[in-house]
Length: 509
RNA sequence: GGAGCGUUGGUCAAGGGGUUAAGACACCUCCCUUUCACGGAGGAAUCACGGGUUCGAUUCCCGUACGCUCUACCA
Image (cartoon, rainbow, N blue to C red):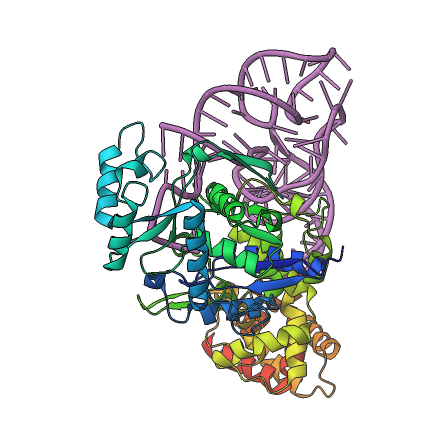
């Protein structure tokens, strides 16, 4: 399966946070490249200067790094086909637009935005609510198809703003093989004369993607399903530019849908329903909005990758948990679903839980420590932290849960759930714990068996059922009704701390 | 409106002419556990609808419905 010629790319435009669907596209690109021993390229499609957002490009690179999906060639690291930022390749595109004009496959157009609006309004009917610039309407517009040649030259020479549009043939069937959907075909009569080169001299996506995919020797192009309708434009471009033999294989990925209702999943849905949509925290410098990401919410990159991989793909077996290496080995585009999938946050969390359970605690400790520190807990001894993580892993779904589930090992609980024990509290129980704290003092070998034995022995002496005492003991040490075995907790926090917590609790009861 | 794409339990999905139509998440019941979890056992689908083709269709073909995407000098 090795084909070192394989070259794929992720080509985002740097306009904001990196969406789930974007990361999945990256992932599929990455898996495909690695599987074939090829190259994965990051190319920044920043041809729309009005949508430029400072920091967005760096943010994308950081996300890829966090996910472990680092490109072989990128703006940051360079590569044999640099530059990898379309704004820096600006001059390249014009010559091909001009070539298309020479060949009669494109033409100059001088219509102002207002004139275009007027056209759309004029031709708008009930049957055709969105008229396009096409073989019919172009005859009624101001362009090189309707103006005499000398007028066109004159307009250009006096600096009239113009665009270059592709001249779509009137009736041609355009077909290609999609790696996921099989044969897909379109008739050109419904395709419009897309702008190739904008008035500011920048190419549109359509021109740039074809020129760059060719220039960068891209062999396979994976993108979201929303691009399917513009495929015929791209096919025509590959053809007109004379590169059709080098056109990449395409795969149009199914969309990730809203959990409720229908439609593409958006950042808004996440805000609305309380789950992340972006890979990492994204701070928008224009609106001052901070959007929480999967990373900051406590997701492991391993789990994030895993859940994205199986959102629309599976290997046909019952396996659901895949490491990146397994994915590289097993991923295959023809097993990608055709239909979109609704995003399910509950299931997403389940994947994280599974990964927490599987990953070794020392590894987890590295990722949990910072959260502990930020929340005011200092871990003096890493070994203790690892031991604690071993004990509480099963009850942590997100990395941030470790604080809730394990904080009391390092710091006495700030509040005790006394309401949980008060109703059944008796003076005998008070006496029990009072005596217990004295006796615990005398234990020489502080370990689970010693503590448990002493606890039972004292309970028998006081003639109280063990079950009646364990819950209060737990609340004293933990603060609430949760956590691993009480005696394990006592053993871990140490003699002095255990006694202190009992004594303090007794003052509240 | 048009075009393209899609449609297996609430969700993710396996399967694909003859099956008891896998599995997972969520939910419910029970077991384990004198905490909370983990773990274990159960529980739900006339495979969107209508026509064909066929001895037989969830699976193939054609329609219909529904949904989504696109229909910008945005990607």
